[in-house]
Image (cartoon, rainbow, N blue to C red):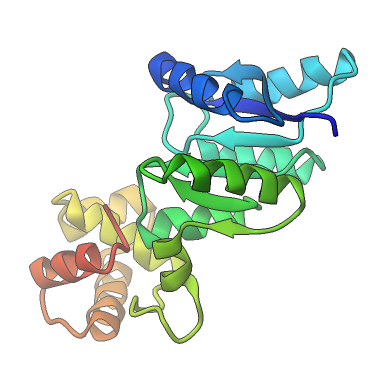
Length: 210
């Protein structure tokens, strides 16, 4: 059977070197190329395509300088590219949701055991969705305890966590202060809190924000 060919995408050379080493040691896996960010990954896929090389799985970091993993995943999947498996240290619900909505075939954490990583690469190549155990439990219907906040409410929460005032949030999101206050009322209700500090603490506890 031909080796599964992987494109590694991470902005840390040391991380890429480590991943290349451990994946190369596994029978049936071949690191075909590396990229330092999302834009580089897209360029590498185009280059490999012109060379007639096949990429079976893109192993993609999430937070990178330049184009991040979510943007790159959306571009790759929209273009009918290979499955993208996210490998990251971030496990907030906002990050997971964004990656899966972008079309990621799976979401794995960097502290995953080697056997789990290798199995995830192979499963993604087979067209299966792969989620880290803790991620799968939180995403499963009926098992998630996170409130159903809208993307705009999550965005506003993240700005709250940065210490922004209502006026600053309104300016950042190009909305009125009254709209900010309305969003806050909905956020407080969904999180069962009554102030900004409690909302931030609750959102972090639920891993809705970092």
